[in-house]
Length: 318
Length: 318
Image 1 (spheres, chains in turn brown, orange):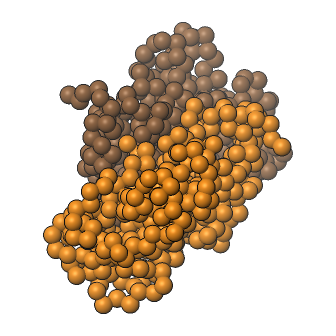
Image 2 (tube, chains in turn brown, cyan):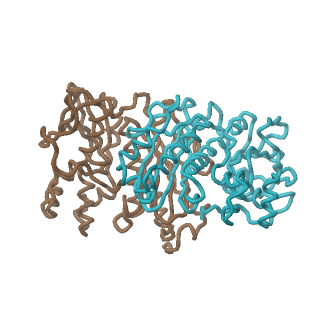
Image 3 (cartoon, rainbow over the protein chains, first blue to last red):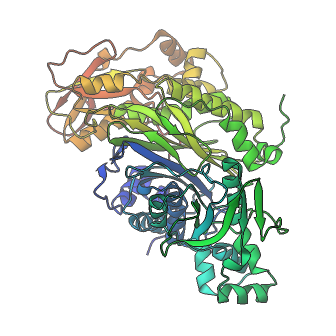
């Protein structure tokens, strides 16, 4: 059992890093892992995809709601989903960690294990990082990825006539956050979705192969993120509400808490579902479900009308 | 003139990011810059070098000592020096920024300009980032780089008989920090060295071409960082103190402040000088100055003896 003394004070910076580093398995694409000035990672495509995200305690997670393992999974997922949304496959993570005095060693080890386990879902490794002492627990993750010879799928290629499709879950994390913020801890499936998103990683490269014209991961909310595709592609996007399934647990939770579950589904972020547009004649596999269409014009509508709820879900990013 | 209202409150997250993004010039190696889920950067070598660092206000910089421009330069330099220390050339930066309420828009714009200007010194671009609201101003930078077909120069290849050489400045930043902490603002050359390190970037790839057997950048202090080479290479390293030059300004400042300038030179970090070991018959160019030698054994000595001062310079990294 770890003492609750500060992890850094207990082990010193180099001891702390050594204890975390020994937990990090290195995959085949890692030419040089942690322990030097920089890591070296294979980029077989001659291009590297890269994305970075910062998670701040009290804004993006709470230690009384989530374990270190949860936060590790969540921080890795937020970045690896960005790689998937380009049609890429994650290869490596780099992690900056700001450690306050009240963070025990065990929490940091759990965080490392969570990052490693989530990275392993796509065959990626934690290859490096930096640890600093500071007043607020902050996790900054950068993900690297490989396009496997394909063009990146941007937000800018949607065309009128395209279909809109989703892979993964919508509104689960938002429902879980509402439940936790009301002081409840169940249903577990929704609460756990706040703690650890289930990102449909393979759907990203599959979507690219299927000819996705635009793609994004849902981090700010379905309608807000579709707004990015609509804006950058210069098109209008309409969501067919009847094609978006509301799971029974979410419907029940909404009823109990007095929340319209479509609010979670349409505006809740952080599940990191992938949404993409495809040419109308595409044959989508089981990963992808059509939920709307692309038209000429601008803006995002639901069943042809502007959505009246809160547009986008403010998950603390100002 | 910017109002002192919070930059994020003033512009909103997307407006804030848009205002910063428009300041970021994109170089030739950038396939896709800011504004999508992830950036795409050329990796012509089929490998990518990557390093990450976090700078926390109050630990690594102070807004009353350094401008936003300074902090941008410093944050970029700390990471790009790591790329150089592998023998690589920086290609891209990704920046995570945690913005407190009291950070004006102008400071963030200066930060972006500083990051961009420092990156431009090696031909790199700021290709992406993340902005979050939070209580403590934190800058997390990840640098990517290219090895240009060479093997990475690690810390582990030094051999008995090798010479030890340095490129760049030693002790300047530490002297500047001491001066500032005593309430002085001059001499400017030393104070500015704290604000913006002058990293000898080209010496990294040049050192690799010259056959460097091990290399590191001095971020924690010369003796501390040589300790990493000695430990990971399984060798002893001796520094010849007479070969390490003390600039006149530093000698004078040391006398005025009652500090032995060798303390700054041997234990001061954050100048991001490069130190490397080379085979004894190497012909070094003007970038590199021999300051010692590698022997069998272990540990780091100065003129054959253990150094009695503080080993390594605690620049707040716990």
